[in-house]
Image 1: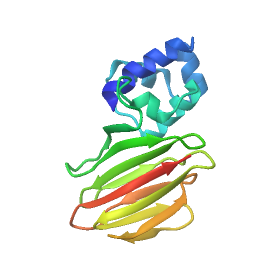
Image 2: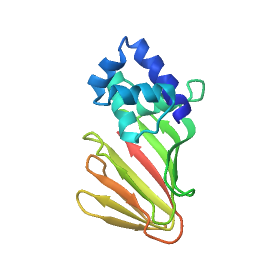
Image 3: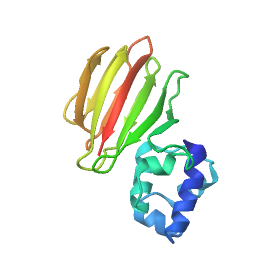
Image 4: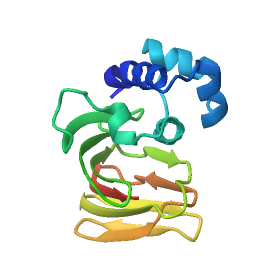
Amino acid sequence: MLRHLGRNLRRMRQQSGMSQVALADASGVSRRMIVNLEAGDTNVSLATVDRLAHALGTTFVALVSDPGAESRRIDEVAWRGLGAESFAVLLGSAPARREAQLWSWSLAPQERYRAEPDPEGWHEMVFVTRGRLRIELGEGDRVVEAGGFAIYSSAQPYAYVNEARTVTRFVRTVVC
């Protein structure tokens, strides 16, 4: 994801006529972070990418995708955790009110991913294919076993936690 993010961010910012300072003001992301992202020199949270996309009047998917690829099939790693078995792959996207995203996630034992709240109206659907996933939500935790699912508003603090000794895998759909 980062290989496309820097180029797309710079191109879209310039096309919109925004300076790095103006984008920083509009997105709430520091100018230094924007400089580093455009240079491909830093890691970034998924929520930060979404704030940048919103400020540029585009979508998360458009900002992180290969401009030459088919828009519905993305297949890019968008997050890596500390363990080699912890990663999230944005598989694809489909039109929705704003957009819909399909993800494949893997969390190594004892790994945790903490997310910032999404804007009002965003929802997630998570289907666990292997292991056991604890979803910590502002409204209360949910534990989802393999074969089970959870649907919730992501416009609240939330985190994914694998407390097990084996890898947990799940499919995540984000709708906004």
